[in-house]
Length: 92
Image (cartoon, rainbow, N blue to C red; front, side):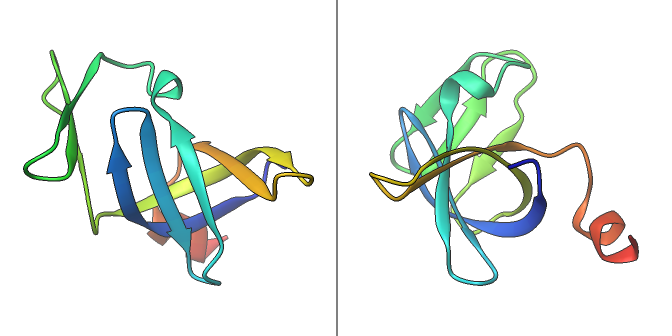
């Protein structure tokens, strides 16, 4: 928990963003964790788009995440957005 990894958006739903890490592990960023705007699910384009800031998260986008929660019984990982870019991650 708390570790930061680069990943790729592998799925978008109206409840969150699925992210696959480079080691093929997948987790989800719950939509309620995207607290900088109200995000609308664009089913046609597999995207979440901010109502006010127009920020877009789309299938295939590179993203940097932090492991936030784990549930070993259900074998689930919850992520949240990391405040670091992939380039910064590689430099450290």
